Length: 251
Ligand SMILES: [Zn+2]
Ligand SMILES: [Zn+2]
Image (cartoon, rainbow, N blue to C red; front, side):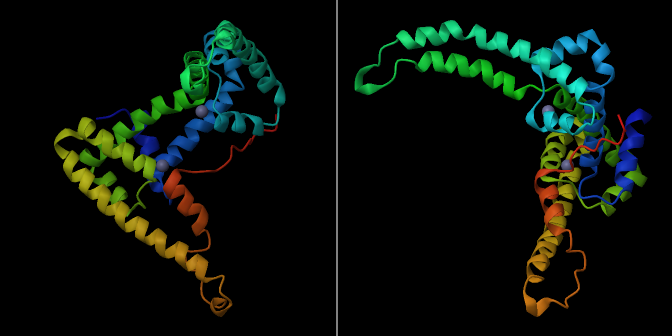
């Protein structure tokens, strides 16, 4: 039996009517991680050291910026900026060396190596994020547990059959993880998920088409059916949820 701290949230996410129950789980984890970064993390020296070094991606800085109280964010930014300035300092020598390099034959610049070295340092800055790191680790557990539940829990499998599938990113992640998580049952799961996704994307196509038809004046009396929110649901199906961070607290 898998740990209840994982099976309960997976069951609850599948109880909701959603385009992707895994996105529902991820949304909550992301919310909690952002809230933690701007609250309790301020008192955790180890977390602060790591977050000063790694920082946050654009999506998560964006969510942190939605929080009403800007002081914790400013404190995070201040110490992170210090680390970033050290990184700029660290490439200064390479940059100066580039300035003294001559162009090669056929007008090719002599700064290729320096440019690549500097770019490497800042590529790392771009792809590190404390919220992404925390969320990813727990999502891996949820995906493993969800696959186990599909293979071992009849009640859950019925919920899966009634669900609207998942977004395309989670579709790929489930397929990637199935052989490792449910071994002998992986083939059956993959076939069932692909069938489900096929049916759900076809439903989506009908809805988005119906949405476009409503803009024709001849169709003004046509019922919306389930098409009224088709653009947002289609985006969420294709690329995951886009709900902004909501600061529910009056802080
Ligand atoms: Zn998803
Ligand atoms: Zn992130």
